Amino acid sequence: MSDDLLPVKDALQRILTAMTPMPAETVALTQALGRVTADPISARRTQPPAAVSAMDGYAVRAEDVARVPATLKRIGSAPAGGRFEGTVGPGECVRIFTGGPVPAGADAIVIQEDVDADSEEDGAAVTVREGAGAGTYIRPAGLDFREGDLGIAAGRRLTARDIGLAAAMNVPWISVRRKPRVAILSTGDEIVRPGELTDPMRIVSSNAYALAAVVRAVGGEPLDLGIAPDDEGALRRIAAGARGADMLVTTGGASVGRHDLVQKALGDGAFGADALEVGFWKIAMRPGKPLIFGRFAGVPMLGLPGNPVSTVVCATIFLRPAIETMLCLETVGAREEDAILAVDLKENDRRQDYVRATWERGPDGRRRVTPFSRQDSSMMSRLAAADCLIVRPAHDPSRKAGDSIRVLCLDGDFLSI
Image 1 (cartoon, rainbow, N blue to C red):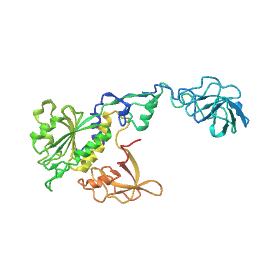
Image 2 (cartoon, helix red, strand yellow):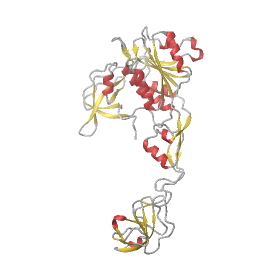
Image 3 (cartoon, rainbow, N blue to C red):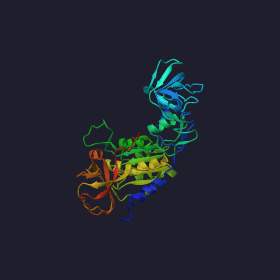
């Protein structure tokens, strides 16, 4: 492998090492979905706070209903949110509802379907047709959690289930990592925004929109700096908007062509100490070889290729884990799985390859992966239709249908209930 092509794993490690954790901020529970916890969340109450009924029925002494039918006297009621202040004695029972505190003296609940009651008034005779042993249909105090118990660890992206748990633990405010502000700058004379196409030879800017969506999905806040033409002065003026962001991502202008101006323009002495310092350039991967990483305006800068597939693949492999590292998540990066190759593949060259593919479940339940026959890095339709990327290491030998391979999953990553 040529010395000027950095292996993917080394590039990723250098990028992640350069990321700075975001400070904590406090948000209302109603605004915490998808945010990443900065501190652990512990219960502020015991749930349930006392032994409560799991069913509508009657609180009884188990020994009174050991033999049925048994007739008991109703002496009161215990609704949810209220309580019966007395004590259940021999031959007595209390009408109780789900969530109602179990009164003193009672040690079992007989469900209402198993009794016949003369009336719903105190003093009524209640005939129990099916007995209940001690503890039946009683939720003990602290069954769910106790005050001070750890409920949610730090470094976790909050799901809807976590929000429900935090609410149950009586936690109205959550300490979370601030969203990283990621400035996105598109470059190129040929680029126009969606809806602005007037010349059929111009290219609609899909990269900035895809990148902004990745940033939001991962937990950051995208800042669209717009489109810079192929002019050094204009590119410098627009890139200056990255000051105050936590990261700058450019798309286009990263290669070696006459119009690839990102390194030259951002490394200009006009920026002084803020000028681009390139950490590395060019990676042994396909798509995405001409990737730049360094620092600009005091923050990490990732210069992505202009081909739309290259941009999104690089965002998946590098930008996503970079943002997740700033958020101090427990795990970073898209998940990888083993799968079965459905077709033969030729040997790979010196670059690690990310091959767009679809999958389906085989009779054995394992996923069988079929790559698209065309892998051109301009074909966004193939990427949108892909379920995964087949990960082929550099110099990977030819593969046969039925071989086990590694795939990087593209589906279902960003919606966790």
